[in-house]
Image (cartoon, rainbow, N blue to C red):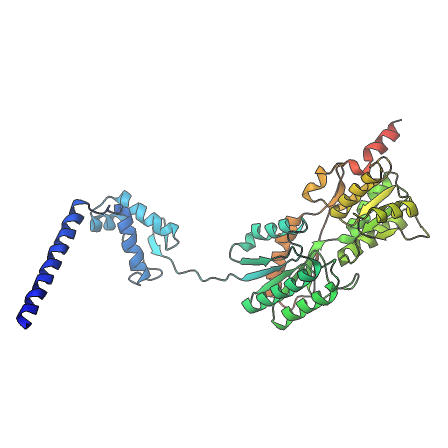
Length: 401
């Protein structure tokens, strides 16, 4: 039995040898395509660098020496060395040769974007784009999330995202506080407190969560909202409006309150004192609210708290049969992309969202490098963009008569 078993084993081994030989012969008939010569040289040198045969600062053999070693032309060698240079593994110094480069030490930071309105309004997308286009952003990473759900769910998701950033130990958070939600003040404060306890730096975008004119302790990057409210209101007054209403949604952010302050200052500066407060809070899509505002105040000019509000007011005025700007002049603030495409192109106060984003990133990096800096308001200037809704063309026509 044992001898028979041995014989069977030899047959198996012989069969294996035959099979292997067949495979080798087949491989010889169809050889694998050989890598380009320069690629072989690149792989050899790359492996030598990775395994420490060449240390940072070491000089590689000259192209002539490598050409002899690999029995190939200098052009082929140069192509391999160029590939190493493109990968950041070597530096080439004229007159000095090619040297192994020290590995780069990453100093990049990870930042979180906590912007509940991302996707709901048109100012935060270009702000984020401005951050990513900043020359300071190249070595850093940005994480973000946003909610498109109802207000109560939006509050919950904002807090969840905050806790995710805490768990991920991000270096800092760019925070645009919630507005228009029932518990916004409490939620905003809880988010700030959680980030504080985790030692995470915070830069506020566009607005503070403290009621105007109070300020939280965090850096803020946005526009001078008070000045923007003043300048856009003054534009209406200078072109003949005398009864100017300000329209805003309830539970708006402190940035809107600052715009209202600027609006009121413009009225006072132009000697317009009214016994009745002409700031109207309500839903601009609510026809009853709009018609009540028209009945009570009989405005010849309206300032929307932002372009979105102004656009909705425009639609409601049109449904009410009010002509813009012949009967009511209308302006907004922000200069979003659709402002010029409304049925009556909207005059507005332009803010550069991309610049806000770039400045926010610079402010965050400064804060991390010097935590003892005082709290800063970095407020960018705005300028008035004149379109048909303010009726300046009507004013010019009257002057020419």
